[in-house]
Image (cartoon, rainbow, N blue to C red; front, side, top):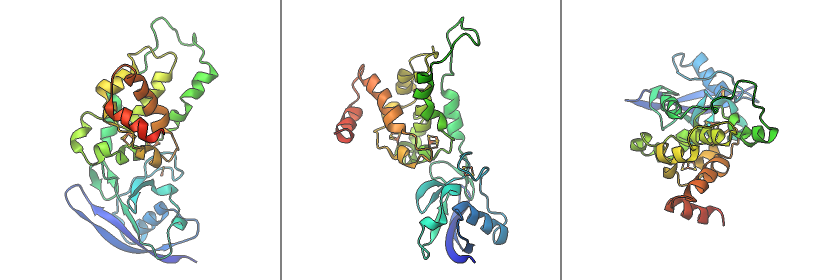
Length: 249
Ligand code: SF4
Ligand code: F3S
Ligand code: FES
């Protein structure tokens, strides 16, 4: 037997909108996405929500739940108090298409700007065998489900629309680090490209991206900081040096 719980869900588009109240039945074991679907089924059939796997693997159902960037399908209702209002809003960093659905094409544009993996000339398919140690080094980064919660959370673009031009964001920094660790990638120096063209220097290692990553990828410690470290060995980056003093005492 379910209980009635109070929800507030943002409805509108990029121009206008408001939080709308819903009282909804919640059953044991349910997640926030179940409740949003129940609202769709019983009270607001035109409520827009993007989802696919309901298993934390497709990265589609990203939203902000009581202000925290999360996957709706992985957020259990049991984590909220019985009388607590659960507020669901769209990702704040990207334009709203409708209700909980945002336009995340910023991330795809940034992905296209990334220089593609390029093996050295003359290496035919099958000629090169990767060592297990090389596979494992970047394995963590390949767990990314492209939910873009890290991109949404990073203050460099969250509060500064004007930075979107120059800053690719943490999801693309782990991609750069992954390619940088690939023994066969003969493309330019990925760290230099990240610094010069992808805005790595804008990152002041606040680690908010790492905190919200549902895959537990150590974005800051294992990708951003090592790339910054190697770049600052060659160039002086005052924000990085200060951050290293604060975070690595
Ligand atoms: Fe999502 Fe983590 Fe990938 Fe960022 S790095 S897009 S938070 S899975
Ligand atoms: Fe942003 Fe993550 Fe750096 S939140 S500032 S990319 S550590
Ligand atoms: Fe696929 Fe939530 S629906 S991650």
